Image 1 (tube, rainbow, N blue to C red):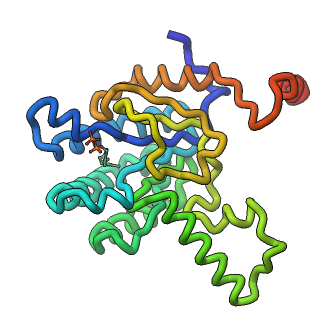
Image 2 (cartoon, rainbow, N blue to C red; image 1 turned 120 degrees about the vertical axis):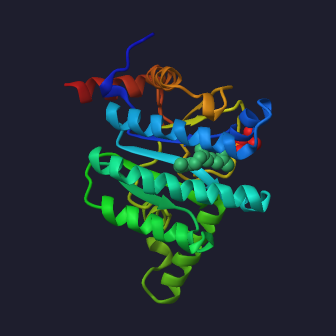
Length: 251
Ligand code: FPP
């Protein structure tokens, strides 16, 4: 296997953790068992990403659309999230990781919000990796909430239309302050974005694997990261321009 070059890692890695339900159903287990096994994979990916020096890791843990799943599964997922955050906060402190949350927190149960607030407060001064959990998150919903806040500021006289740039708009998103993801991994063979970080993924390199999330291993993570290292990111420029820019920045 090609070794991982620590200088060519994504600064921001985003993950759509898909296939927990199928993993469980293939084994005649309840779907929640798949989510529980998925939480073990979360531990591994958080630990590895922080160890490798990735600065931002964002996980799609619960979508706006997931509220329509059977009530039992939604409840079990909320309980699992709460348990995970509580159990892992001590490790986050040891690893200098800071918790962050994006999504519509108004829809989350109070006890989940309390647990999140506690974990975010406790880890607020940590200077290592930023672990962002996307909870009750949808890209379109995030964009419309940002537009509503911006419109309110315009009504209040704080912003005029000529001041609205991409940078200003970005500051209204839940991810304001985070760089855009460089690399997105989606497990379980589905090749779509599913309403995740619609604005932020504009130039992100995408990686899809057939493996279901509970089966995603350290080796698979390393394989994905070495694939990222082989990509040429052009951001709309030509290949020549990119290599000249590389020559200059290497001087
Ligand atoms: C998608 O699989 C996964 C989810 C909706 C939940 C993700 C949750 C976890 C990985 C565990 C808890 C998370 C954290 C951060 C501790 P799916 O159920 O849609 O799979 P399917 O498409 O096979 O049904």
